[in-house]
Length: 119
Image (cartoon, rainbow, N blue to C red; front, side):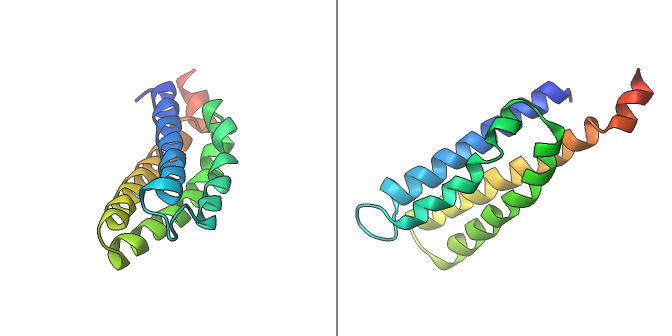
């Protein structure tokens, strides 16, 4: 797969995860009616967004570690809650795993030693 396609797929997954976290905690299934402070969990996802949108390898590398916290939260909430929150937890797990796999693939394909061999 081409690096540009992977970068675009990673950006789509990250933006989708940001939107999921916002809508989850504000409207779909907040911990408290009217929204909760848990919406602040979206802020760390905004840090890698500019670098991912610019397809920067280093950003993909460190954001692959950041995304594991969202994977963990999704697993916990999918297993411990019911109804809408459990379904949203499964979606969060899916998006975070997809981003993690894409980030690893992008970092692997764009590594400097591989680029020099193909030139």
